[in-house]
Image 1 (tube, rainbow, N blue to C red):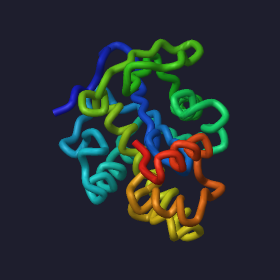
Image 2 (image 1 turned 135 degrees about the vertical axis):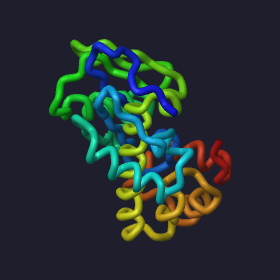
Image 3 (image 1 turned 30 degrees about the vertical axis):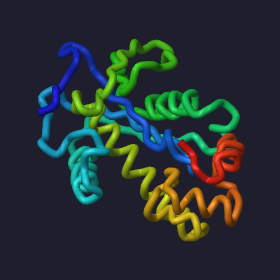
Image 4 (image 1 turned 120 degrees about the vertical axis):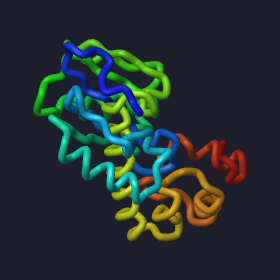
Length: 200
């Protein structure tokens, strides 16, 4: 069972991103504020849940959250500021859209660019420890997967409906065969070509 809060006296927002390790598409982030006493056995790191369970958990989160918000940073922006800063920017955009002002941010990971006026606490593997971060990871993951499924209709040869933009063998080979799409992060281009399709 995950922990329901880090500080029982403060309004906490859990924050996480999805799509950081992808070759294509935006990076998504979510910010979620849950009731202090809320917990549910389905809440966990989104990567540990099946697609079906993520969708079930998403419905529960949307019903129970006091506030939640999603945001994204485009592939073009990622190329301009790098993926780490883009992940932080996506979180900032999500936080700014919350209908309830948090007093503390719980960030999945070990680094974060400070958000004005709100202290943040970074937690490595926080999505497997705190309900609000787990909820954010689920919302970010499901939103990004849905986005990539829609993009797949326009770019079917990259197999995004299955790989969601991650560097699978099929995806890498498609890049070599068809080149980069407007949705690809161009800063990965040299690495793909130099490694002959093998990106690590």
